[in-house]
Image (cartoon, rainbow over all chains, first blue to last red):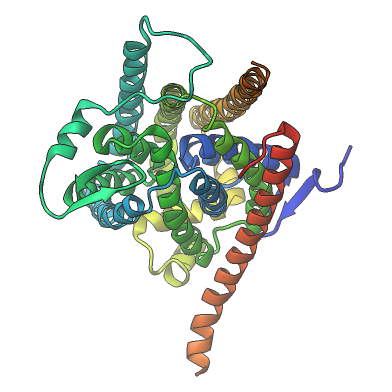
Length: 413
Length: 45
């Protein structure tokens, strides 16, 4: 049955057809998660869009536009709750911009020495599993033997030892962060943000999942301020990313708009939930999300090993293809040789399919296995997005109920 | 003049389109926020 506004929609830029409800649901779930954790959520949206049949080249750009819009809604809400440290956020943007530029240069150097794919994937895995393990360790250490009295107000995990050391560095100029509630050297903020920006630029991600923990553990922000301030930064970086991809014709505007409608509603739930869930619990859920994202990257890595079986043959065929040679001379002239091949393959799926059909069973099987593992990665992230948003909303509803009970108790007694 | 317009036009169109989408999102966000608070029975912000 085709339900109006929720049924099949045609996306003219990428040329794919997709069910609108899937985009709204994905947008909603990532909106909840983004508003709750202070991340853009590209690590969930891009593989999930890919599972829905969205070409990767358009998935990234569309995701950027969705992230920018969603973050504005979530940041506005967090600002109302006093969770956004504007001074810290603005300084972080400066450091991040420098770091991203350095990271991009490092990637180009790695491309030259031919180690980019392996280095990026392993760094990504180490970061995701390292962060999630540390956060899980911290959670269980702090909750061991602690009271489970649910009537206590929203609490935080306190300032880490590393953050206390950073705050004690008295290198002028010192800055007072009113919202976060401490003094810190401007250089510490700039260096930390440059490091996180470097990692984001190097990994080719928005970097919210690196910045949020560094705001908590290295700078020493309370969890909710880290969430709000990170979102504020994502507004700026996401808007720039969306503009840049849109100029290259890589943003599927209809899909981005449909996803944003879901995300705008989801972000309200996610942001509201930060008021009812303890800071320590936010860290726990974030750690679990990072762990699942790490597993998804492992699946991608396995898919990559199957791709390696046929990629050199495919690249060799592309390079001698007359259509490619013509395209590379005119439209792809400004791109590097590697990007030319990658982009042409993405834009000429039918021709690539035709080539694959003529190849040996080994290559065809490798292609099928690659798709299967990529799908596993996408379904895992899709499942995680749905499951986590249900968990976050249920915790928020429980918090609202408890607050009402406490108010009723106070009024009554 | 024509060169400047041809260079600027795609930028202006892109910015206007993205701004329109973001305005729509903010509208949906504002309305849904009001509705959610009303449904949950929590006032204030």
